[in-house]
Length: 206
Image (cartoon, rainbow, N blue to C red; front, top):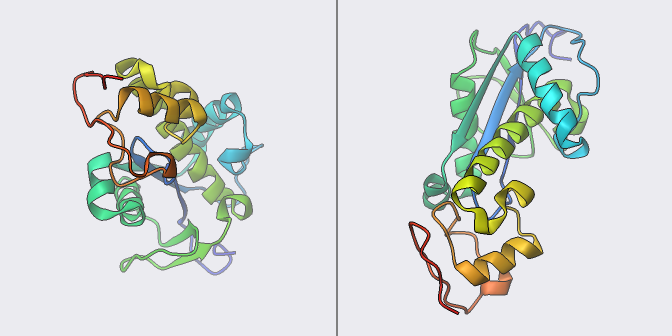
């Protein structure tokens, strides 16, 4: 444990939204005091949405510090999703005060030249602070996608949050892509098809 190694400000870092076809990627970083007391903190994917919302508030209240950052659809398309995820993580860490002296990062790959770190595969199931970060990132992103649903109601973003569900793919085929769709993500269903890229709610004629 990093606390026992003398690192007092250990931040868990995780992201949400690498896989969807639409919307930003969101990252969070969280620092707790040793032996945090919030029950039920776990990998955000294992928790019901209502539980995640309640835990979001508890984490924000109990954490020593936390930060949330995102990378936009345009940045995802320009940089690729992996580099955009790192960018979101750096932005999240820039919001953390006091700054961490050690990072625990979910996944296999990461780079930070300024702070020592350890990567953990399935870290959101192995580290309390990474799990807390996954909850903050997931809830933040879900809230954003629900807001986008008001702007683009034909796509059902409030339900699938931009992931490649059957209903989402059907909506894309019917209406084309909207401003928050990632142009660098190409579902196999649409390979070889010409789909409209539009703005301001214009529809693809069928």
